[in-house]
Length: 279
Ligand SMILES: [Zn+2]
Image (tube, rainbow, N blue to C red; front, side, top):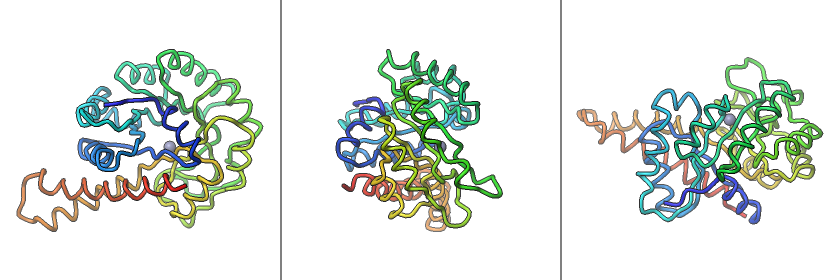
């Protein structure tokens, strides 16, 4: 097992001009899917959990599960806290073996966001842990209407934020949204290019589920170096369980129908790995 920081993997992507895919896991089945994908492709990935997942399965569970699943595998990967909501949770994840944490202060004032993100960075960097910050509000599927321009990350603020916090990576809002997109997503590629030109910090795209392959490629060309996928994996998992039930209607063994769900997740993971690593 070679667990490295996200920054280590993102740096390699920066050199090649590609992106590191980051996959959210929810349970043993999604952890099996991403670890098998790494064993089969040898491509390094970022494996991540949101706070809600940690509340569901237990804060120490996912890191331990990935360690066990990656035993003997030489492929590098990072264990990342996605959308961390407090400095305390970030510190706890680091204690549990996470090599990368995000503090999402995008809902706070600029100054508060800087203050807490910088604190997380100062506590994490000496331990070799990379830190992702977020600036600009990424929309969510729960919003009834989503206006692209007003929520886009401001270039001047991004320059100030990255200088003040020294974050390893910056999640930006460029018309992307979490969950399922309503209507056709309109990604502001020009803003990605402006941010890429203005800040040295690698840029992260959240809410990439539902973006076309062509849009993902355009985002990478414009300067995105880490892409988060969560919703599409959850969808593939759910559809896979339904297919498993249909294929084995008489089975009462989760190991039988869950295998179909694991393979469903893997299909999505393989496709995203391919797109992110095209040069
Ligand atoms: Zn996100």
